[in-house]
Length: 307
Image: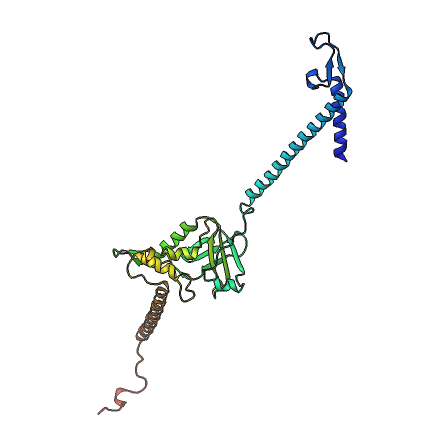
């Protein structure tokens, strides 16, 4: 209804302008002159049908121009809205990320439809096989990369030249450089006894599967006690002498933990033995410092004789 009234008003306005105000050149044939040879002294003659047609065409042109302008304004508004959404939430226009789990430790769970945990965000690297999602609000979540085992944070390795180096720290640094500040999606089917999510993780920006990449570059090993998904990657890294395989006598992380645990048990027992010895020594010293009690009753002559 509003559109029709606007059209009608515009038509009338242009009709009046055509008759009263517009110059001859603007009418495009709506006005003819009696003297074709000279404009001076010529008296214009209005042709009603041409005037009406001019007003109608001009009205349609103006209306089309308005529609174009409105379309541009609508596009601008939509574009501004999209820009605002992307500024507030840069990931709002991204398609849902789906990692390929076909050759991962989750392949069997995927076939059964048991991959029902998905965590996305920018994580903190704890070590070479652990990530932590720590939002400002909400529960903190740790991800243990499934199927791989990286050197422990304090684990030392030996280079080919015989020089010790912190391979655990090197593994952590490699992962930090790998994912930078990219969003990472981790897929999983369960947690371990420590409450960590056992996941296969992907860098959304590059599409790299982090678990596989860590083993492939020799910064972690295939954790065969739980999965054999990355055995081929470990063999390739070993042959190419990458990462931990570039040095001498690399100790698998689980052997390192076992040794440290045993050593810790021995050290704990040694500490207990030392503490017990100190206690006995203290008690003996205290007993030795007490004065000896003298004889009571009778003279020495009354004492029985010894043979």
